[in-house]
Image (cartoon, rainbow, N blue to C red):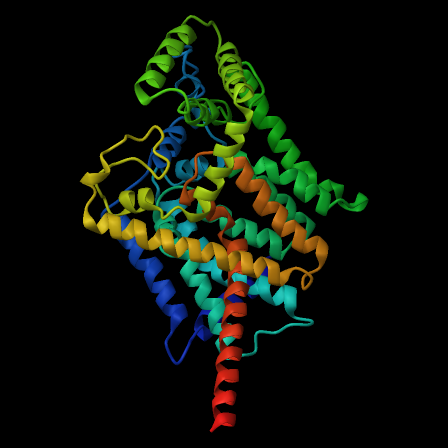
Length: 446
């Protein structure tokens, strides 16, 4: 294992050393950019709400006191079980500061471009090769484009998405190394509960009678952590966020079809009073879930519409909310405008509008290149591996829900960069061939 780590480290160093185009050291510029953003965050720190929640949870590690109050709020009742534990544990180990996880995020940002390139080599080393310097530049430069600016923001904002993105690329690159697969799957779930949805997909792809033991470690974690939820909350749960988020976000968007913001707030205040009369967190969770399910069953077609709309918004969201946090812009609503204020859009500065318009167009272009790359790679990759990548993208996106945000796409950046990189290669090839044909026709005419 130590020897593998040494070999991988040397490979990463060589990758960045050789990452040049016309003597421009792209690799060193990328490393410098990560360093600059890291220093910026240490001097002028900015965090999103999630960052503070992870910090608050870390303060509860080692504190087993369970205060039976706030029964109407699952998150306040036992904040330690608000999220799965790994990121908060990193903060706790680092002395209840963000420095340790931020350092790991920087390492993730360094690994990801290398990991995507290795993914390309792994898939095509036998029958397709990026030997053409222009193609190679198109593929690599795409990696920088799709990763900026959100990639850089979240290499230094205290949330685990970038580490998760690196873990997913690491998993795909080592899909047949059973022990590593077991560890990475467990880590993904321990960072974010949403990655439980990966288990069925990976189980189908990795189903081999002689290697079923790889699911022992993820299963142990899920059993132990959900049992902790049972002990504290009265029901088996890996995260209270899986109960509260659908109630606080998905349902509110659904209700907005028939009610205005004021009416929705009045309804939630009334329900909050009702929750306070309940005796246990289990009853609160059941009541919240019932209200979400009832709302969806009343408007199933509209809910499917807003769910798919949220998925599309995730794919093209210009990331204004993330830029607002990183550059300390005046707080206003996010792209979907749920639970985050509803400022008058006329109050936005010209710089913010320029950012929104540019990256909305840019992200739309990136989405088109991802689609082109996905179509191009069909039939060129091993079918089971190709459909594994597609399944991971689709299952993850559909699990997010109707509230789209650019940040939610970061875990998939590695896979999307791979598809988008080949999309850019295809477009560049078409451009070069068209240009060559036009030159030949002009030469023949003359």
